[in-house]
Image 1 (tube, helix red, strand yellow):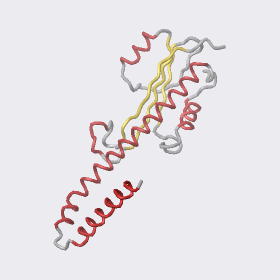
Image 2 (image 1 turned 90 degrees about the vertical axis):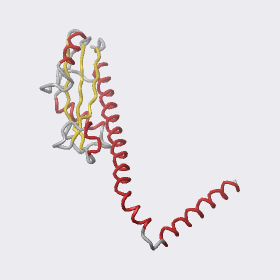
Image 3 (image 1 turned 60 degrees about the vertical axis):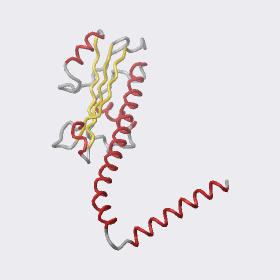
Image 4 (image 1 turned 120 degrees about the vertical axis):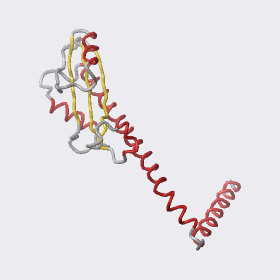
Length: 184
């Protein structure tokens, strides 16, 4: 334990000496170097933080999609009375941490099919559907749920990841495909 205290004491002492040396330097070279490098360093730091927060938001969206998809698959959420507004509220209730109040950029598309081949045909048209609708099938139907959120991007360091550079937003999305259980 004493060795650890000694090591921390030495490190703190070394840090204090360096800080005093930087503060006492009147020639300005160190301050000039810091002024040149600081904006680049902070931009990189904020870009890393933004990537981490965006990844966290993507994970929250995926978890909400998995939870609601499971409830649909098992029959806890039924097609009767399921509207876009009701489903939107279900998602917003599961994603309070990083998403704006009311989830303004959230778009949900739920469709049912007779076979999984028709589901694959739906994906061949593209990931983002032309129109969004909520059409959940009954027992044993094949379903697909696609959830999209327009996430604001502050630093456009990674322009290749920004879907719409003019609006400054990238598209987070989660997809789930399943066959309903024989509920009823």
